[in-house]
Image 1 (cartoon, helix red, strand yellow):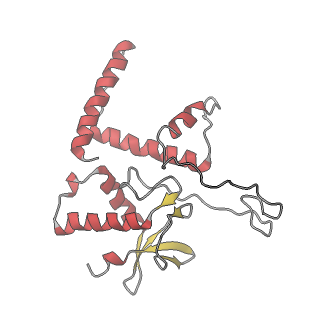
Image 2 (cartoon, rainbow, N blue to C red; image 1 turned 90 degrees about the vertical axis):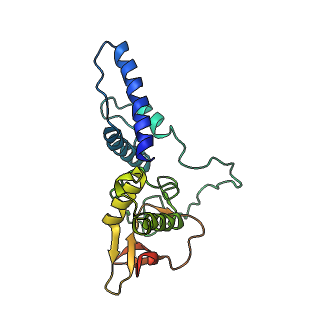
Image 3 (cartoon, rainbow, N blue to C red; image 1 turned 180 degrees about the vertical axis):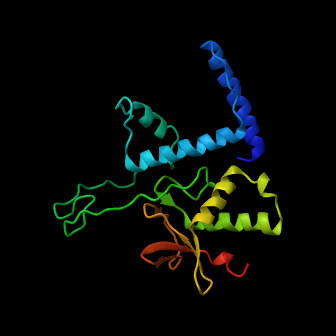
Length: 213
């Protein structure tokens, strides 16, 4: 959303807040758009982390009802009928979380990106679209460099996207620009060969569109 939409959303939020506080006979403290944006990013990070870990248990009550309800309030992908039936895993398959040699695998969960991000990049908690990512970079370059748009007027999504790039872009000695990918993400179908490369033991996305700019 752009700043104007956040102002409108904040007005609606404060009206509802005032009504709830009036019903409980307590004083309402109005929120600013900046406060809502900050809180949204915090909550979305917690929701994504819980979905990724499949951890819905409340720390206080131990009940899963609250977090299950809110983590699944908005579908993260398109709902579609399956066109094939999953078969039961064979006896020769190794257990989930273990390598074929029986050694338990370990994966450190990377720091989650700020939210919201431009639409289409993170299709769900575990799916990443490299093409939409590069399209977002191109759009941001055109707006900030070619059209000289004031960054203060940029949408919250693109501000979060800018921070993401600052944290994970790497420039090699030969001028190659890479974006460090999250280990827990899967790529969408149709990702071109050669777009994802290995560097220092991690997966990176080539960002050739930023070279020579």
